[in-house]
Length: 372
Image (cartoon, rainbow, N blue to C red; front, top):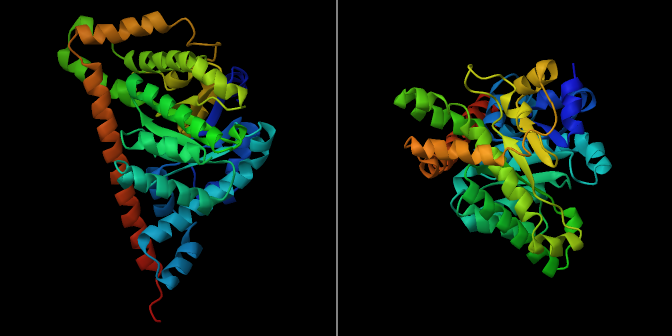
């Protein structure tokens, strides 16, 4: 069952699970995935926690105590989510130690309502790192305009970061620049660069969803010929940019100081269109030094019938450029689509956060003591 996952891992792709819940931790399921399915990291987001808290009774004991203390909903969420991330980080600690900090990582996101506020994002990142208090945590910061200086500041303080919600190649280059600037600040401050890690989460399936919608509206044979090609092309060109930046003279100076490359992470790899194979965004995005974070359904699909045939990114850059150019020729604007996806991405994360607030508030009310 796990041959494809092993091959993926052998190709230099780190397999991370895009899910977490208290039940997954306490049942031994997470440990089992690490042991049997080559999972070496975990990512979380507000939607994942909202689903976990609203399903089952795994959080009742903690929620009952929080309700008895009369804490705010925000504080309750912070206590619950950081507890899960801390416990998951402890389970992944052997992986972290074995890979010298490269993997064994668990990501937790800053409040997405702060996405356009640099100072608040930095303050929240520091608070989350302090609360979780595990060296194998990554603080998720969105790649908005306000997020870029926050990334530099947080990396400069020695806090490892997962940069999320990247859709455009231009923004991705800005993210890498922000990371390098952060490392330069950390170096100036005398910090140990070998302890600072980062991944850049480049979203995949949402690009096809939005562009395919526009292609379908055109309805021509010429348009249909480029359906389902944009997301892979975009991600492959991102990897080309990564190779370029991390072979530059600027990087060489940091490399000498034992800095770590910021790995590209393929996010949103669950296939949304049933016309495509369910392992598309895994099989076709294989390259060394990358991370693929998968929902469990995708992980199981790859384990069952994934076709990992080696590096599927190298040598694909010219075709990727041609695929993006073909869209422009059809009148589908790449720049417009990726900006829309970034704006929608922030809105979706905010909506998920609000859902998380509502469901946690409902649980606190349900479990609050009836008498003082």
